[in-house]
Image (cartoon, rainbow, N blue to C red; front, top):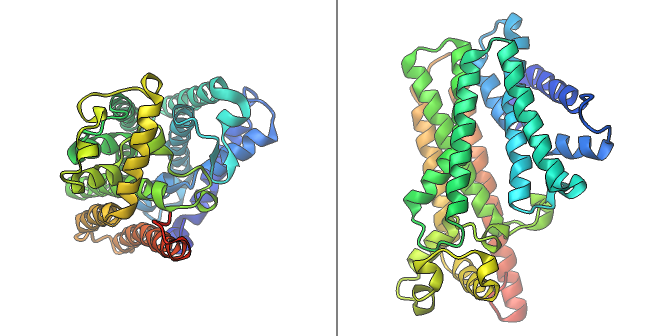
Length: 354
């Protein structure tokens, strides 16, 4: 995370990290350094950072409580990542082996369950019932989004609206919940609380769109995980949807069996491999990636407008706006580098490039 944006809550973020380390050192978990290293590498504490920034009210006595809630948010996020790695068959994340790679799918699922239970129990014991309700609701919606995504694997008829509905639940809702909890801790009125919650949802929306862009544009080393995996697994993301929409009368795409019915890869592996290659070329040779970045910028722009009237006198709105700009820049740089590398390879080979 950008140190300038979160410098005002650096001590609280350090407390969150320490609390997470304590959880990961629990007697119930295997005493394995590779496990701890894998767990510690997976989170950027972005959701906790948002909670801390928004809750900041100058009362040092509340810092311990706020750090515990920030830790709870990150525990839930980490639990979802552990489950996602099993679903996605991911071997690496942020240049480290996943828990699923180190300890198997069962180990990753059980550890995710442990973190879910540990988080909810700690919130109940601390009588943080409002935060408990917010996070339980976010996890429920996250699961709904993941289930809908799984139900639409290999479905090339997925629309932009359906995609947005999925990411609003599976990704954006936990950002929104983090902002709502931070807002409650600060003591905002209804209008400011609603604005910050909507900011979180739109920020999370843009965050996921950028992530889906990077799945096509980033090399393995910067991402720290295999790239281009979503399409291989049948997950239809915004770049694919936009590329298919722009293809118009492309007969090969229009006549695909995946247009009219959903197929599991195991039903017809060769058919999907052929389709995947064709779709990937559509994404890479057209304007779908630029259009995806535009969509992310639209979400971040709406997020910034949500908090434009927020006046706390502590620079919160400026910091949140800067966080949006940082995410936009991340997408822009990745797309620019992707295009530059593609042009160089194309010049060398006379082909499409990447």
